[in-house]
Image (cartoon, rainbow, N blue to C red; front, side, top):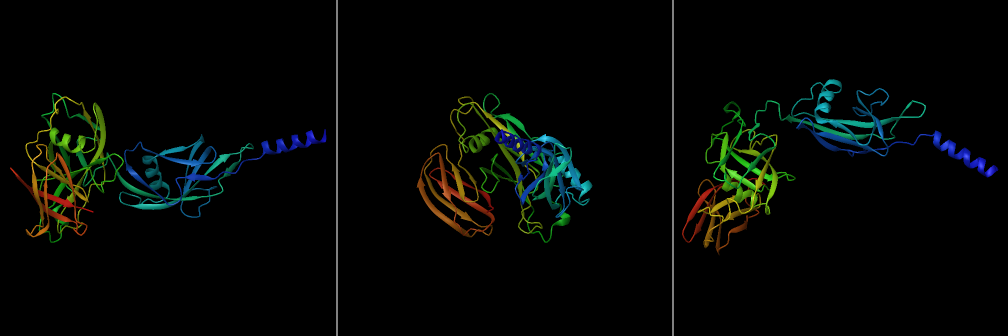
Length: 355
């Protein structure tokens, strides 16, 4: 009888007690960008359900937090980037605008059985960086195609093209001793990549424009073939624009946002045979990619700087529909001219190396 009674007391004591809480994610020193799609959520995790989230500068008291949310029984607790950006400006730092960053601490709380609030035993640091939201005026914003656009790049419409448009990256008023005007270059990369080695870099043939028009056939060769999309598939990628200027300040400014774009490809319709009639060259930070749909015998590749000095020359003497040439590791970031000689053709153009 005593043993049963003791066990009952222990169980009742456990039920009446409150389990301590520990906040887990985002982990300390995580960097979170507040921008882009306003509906994107940031998820906050603890080792038990969360009733309250608390935010403040280092050492704040969760009993009197500068910023808090009631989420009652959430796991995880999701707060939109729009709400976080608005509330940080309203309750923690009124100067928290585009381009600014702030490091705060966050923790959580829960309601105990006696209706009092218990707080997590730890706090974690998080760095918020304020970026542009898609609907905000942007000095270098992407315009068209709109974010999350969808295109069928095979089938009866394969002769069409897509025009990519953006705002001017910089104005003449902030150029300092610029010897060359800015060039704009379209970059396309996989949805999970960061443009450090883009799948596709399309060089502008104009140095003052704010748009590039690309044919469906070019997009097929670069995106569909470049990313190995199989039969009857769709692929969602992202794009932005890189500005290049030899003597601009800031140098090589880039768009502050990425737009998603989906390409639908129906195998066997429109592009049964790749026939571009010409050699094409595009690059990443480490390689030159040569599209050679007619299997021409490629003889030499030559790379020159803007003064016409040859910085790299390589005999290829090979053929194939697609070739990859590794760029020398000692080539510095700059605008280069390439010259590709084949048995029946010569192609020259420019590319930007941005490592």
